[in-house]
Length: 148
Image (cartoon, rainbow, N blue to C red; front, side):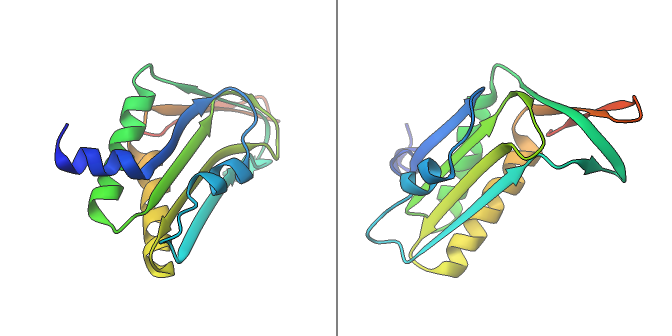
């Protein structure tokens, strides 16, 4: 393990893909650090519409390499920013409207860094981690949305 990977391992406190409900409190608690002056948290929820269409059902699925890819994203954020702690949990399986789909958090010495790290974490997760969303619409149509 490289020195950067070892350092990232110390700040990555939670990195999971789950088929059970997510907890904001768990993710927030995972990034607590006495040297952090700022914590930023993002919560993604299942909405009742997309592309001006009513959503009636939604399911997430993931590739078997999902955790490895999530860790790679988190390691890169930790290497690029003064992160004290990172946490990310994404849900898979069938979800209901209003369910938490993803919760990520970052703690850093200052608020601007925490916002930047949290934003990078969710944006890179959505762009690079192999998780797919299958939406079924009230009009009978459906679509697959790939994260990468």
